[in-house]
Image 1 (cartoon, rainbow, N blue to C red):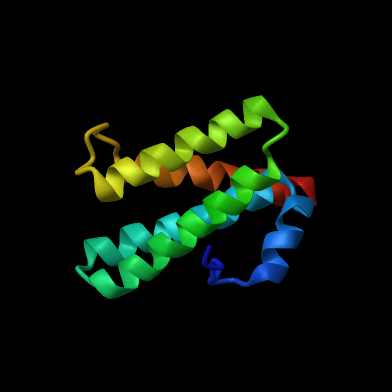
Image 2: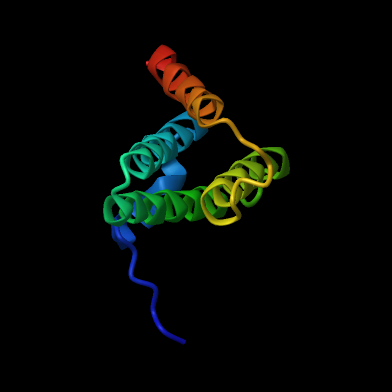
Length: 114
């Protein structure tokens, strides 16, 4: 089996579980924001890089929360919505502004926790 080459490296993959869910989802949200921005601007190459990073962080977050079913479910639904928006012609009819607002809430949670 081929080894997966992570964009952010093995170090982040191993440390990711040490971060709060708000931090994890907030960072995913940053990549979601970049994905939306570059898609809207028609820059497919940069959009694809941001999409790949978002998916990588989703995967790290799923692995970090595998033993917490309610949290895991939330992350899986968020990932599914993200994938539907970018790969399935938005069959869920997700509003990109609402999607971004969802992730912004995690950023605020992380800031308030400090």
